Image 1 (cartoon, rainbow, N blue to C red):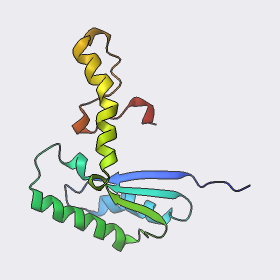
Image 2: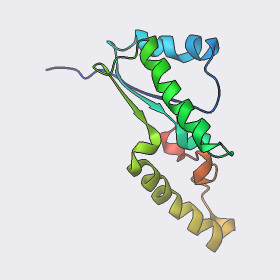
Image 3: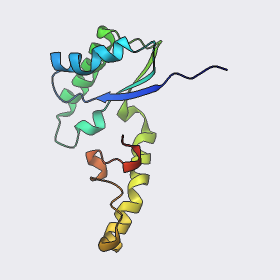
Image 4: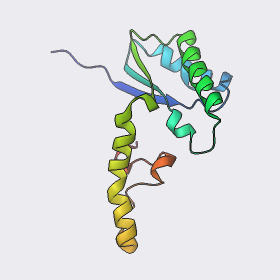
Length: 131
């Protein structure tokens, strides 16, 4: 019987300049753990657009972020690396998961379970998915 490797899912926003803190805090750990874990790394560009981003600048930052991750050693043969907005199911699922919250809040705000902590566009996540 084989045992599956633990899964790591992590993302990085392309809205700022990557710096040493990104490398020390996340990227070098991601690179070092590629043989120990099944890794899924994501450039979370949808989380970056909750505030205005100039489209050309954001596109350049997305490309830069992917390039830096590859240059630092993220190996596409060992880890899945993708851009969040390129997976349309992500946004569709986010809105589907937000519907009960939105309906309950508007129909009976005093009885709402507050299943989601923030508006869907601001990266609200169901509490069940958090650690």
